Image (cartoon, rainbow, N blue to C red; front, side, top):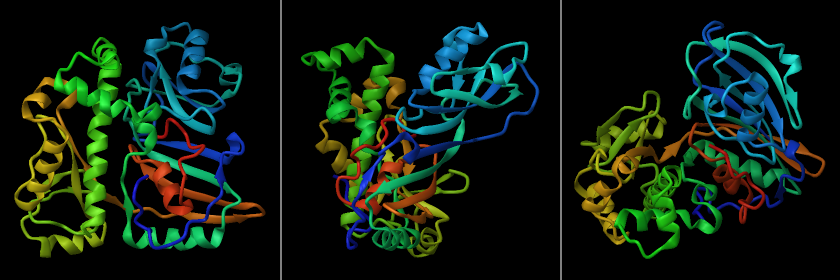
Length: 349
């Protein structure tokens, strides 16, 4: 169970996803299609289908290879979701003629480029919590608005039973005694998935320690800081100067996704990270073994979030937006407490 920023407040309780309509996700593109170009972009609404299901069926209908289909992110099956998909086709089809079981095309346009993973600025959520107490949820939402949202990775990042991170560590250590690791070593997608889960697990540990030590919303000398508007990184040399910028959500401490090209921190911040990495049983040599899957990067620890609540007869609806890579499960956990991951999506980035 992840720690809460709003730990001092009771959660609303309740349950999620009594029906797919209770969990609506709208992907927010990084850019809009230009209206011309070799790639057909289709804005698709789906219900009870995975993104790959719809890409496969549309590719067949458009007579292109499935691998040519493009998308910015995977969306949950047990939800109502909208997102852009792209296909390299010369002629414009009739959007009304493109539909399948559980999905339909809402709009069509064109663009110069294929959509690729990460080409989204975020997601807009509208989630119904059945049986939840809206007053308690409102108190938690107000606290999050003031303190910020802890940018943890959600449980779905770690696979069934949370095994992916352990397999990722085994891969980096070069061990061959684990059947799961041997299988992942032969599959590039699985290898990348498991190593990224290991990186995410250590980031969550780092962020949980910052919360426990009262450093969640503070700049520590030697921290690598992230500019929330541009993504730029710099080293904190003067916590007194950077502290007010953290408070205004201009910048955030940026935690490690460990790798052999990670932007290094310094001083006390570096000591915290070195201790965490050593305890994991992975060192610099092992990170180099990870190659391109373990180059490393930095992730903002603290983000602003505004949750709008609508009371319902049997609970409430929560509306909020998150940047790409952040998890609705974490926000809902803050509102509901405990056990808020029950019934949440497997694909939410």
